[in-house]
Image 1 (cartoon, rainbow, N blue to C red):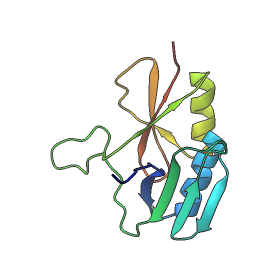
Image 2 (tube, rainbow, N blue to C red):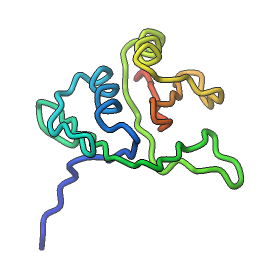
Image 3 (cartoon, rainbow, N blue to C red):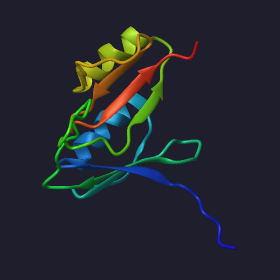
Length: 123
């Protein structure tokens, strides 16, 4: 039987290098491949990372999606130890806090390409 190993979640964006640097700022992971069409981040200790591929016609998802809206295909959950400080860093780096927040202890943000991600604190 063949073996399977998840290496990365891939996010489409019109600016792979810029979006990689946004997530590098949040996660602290080093950049691997660094090309205008394909950029990667991988944690230093190993494990699955993030990749960013060029999509010139990228359409950001709508959060929350309504009928006929571009729907989110995936979102990232990022655990933090201080929710308010993490939101401040994310917005300073280029994220937007989503208008719709379904939970009090989680902040849904949109990255510079419009992909939703959640910042949360383990209780």
